[in-house]
Length: 381
Ligand SMILES: Nc1ncnc2c1ncn2[C@@H]1O[C@H](COP(=O)(O)OP(=O)(O)O)[C@@H](O)[C@H]1O
Ligand SMILES: O=C(O)[C@H](O)COP(=O)(O)O
Image 1 (spheres, helix red, strand yellow):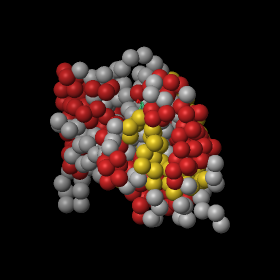
Image 2 (cartoon, rainbow, N blue to C red; image 1 turned 30 degrees about the horizontal axis):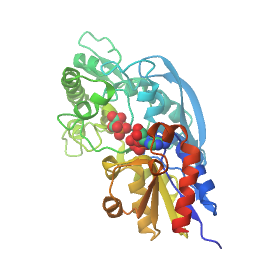
Image 3 (cartoon, rainbow, N blue to C red; image 1 turned 135 degrees about the vertical axis):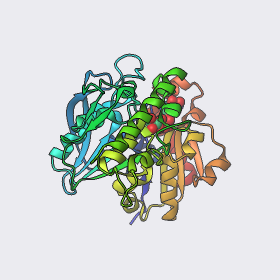
Image 4 (cartoon, rainbow, N blue to C red; image 1 turned 120 degrees about the vertical axis):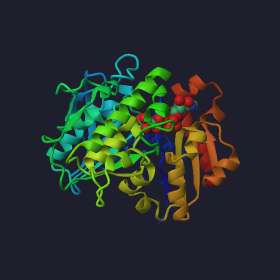
């Protein structure tokens, strides 16, 4: 049998989806390939799951600003697994106008989870990243039946800032998730609070000013404190009687997606896993890499961030375990050859090597990528 090339890229954000990248690379290589578009839990995760055999389920849910949005999750009947990508319902890309750091909500993500649970999900994979909100997952758990109340017993409004008024959480109407395994796939390991927390680190990319960051951090602290006091909150008390949610607030990943990581731990009993590793398992990477002579991975920008658990490095590690060499394609790169080799990537090919004008690189990404892949083939195959 002719050994195949496994083409397993992430998207080039802003120009090509992961499936489009895989298609163009295959066309340019001109040899037998297996295409396995990948994702790390953030934008494009549902698309990657659908490309590897999941069914797309689309629902109208609440967007980050309260406007309705059509959002999808991916569903696999055999294992009754739902892949819910937070960015689909509650992502920056769903903001109809400018950012709304104080009031953006994760509500729609909770609606998608509820839909998957009603459909009979045994496992819900919740992919985090690219969120518009810093609400500690408040909207998500409200959509799942929790009531977040102020001292007058009134339901809190939308968004993170409202949590400053939180006095009580009533979970008597919470959806029954017994028998549902919830796994959070996250590419960040920040805690909920403080200088490395959700508001401080990711608030600014959602439009938060320094004052907003301070306010949101305090509001998230209030959520953690009230969650700790909430009698009967899932996972509220460890076996030895110590309260869980405050500990949970410090857990790596609790600060992902504006604190949705925290809510998933405290309310959904979730396990948090490194996004790309978990997704590669789910997409069957180890099966596909067997017998391959080369893996081609990639993403839009190969930079310092890539080294911190982004898809190409995760792919390179997994391919390395199987003894298969890896090269990467990208739109642009700032990493040196040495840094790439240390991460297990033998060489990287950038569109900007072919076309120095960044705008044309974005606009003509598809045809350029085919040409770039032909270079990879000439060098490597
Ligand atoms: N066709 C392209 N040509 C050059 N650069 C690109 C292209 N597509 C995406 N990029 C660059 O990649 C960036 C997105 O990075 P990417 O790695 O895809 O996502 P993320 O940073 O979210 O992981 C864009 O802002 C842009 O700078
Ligand atoms: O706040 C978020 O959504 C993430 O935790 C960080 O998102 P990013 O990795 O997409 O920047």
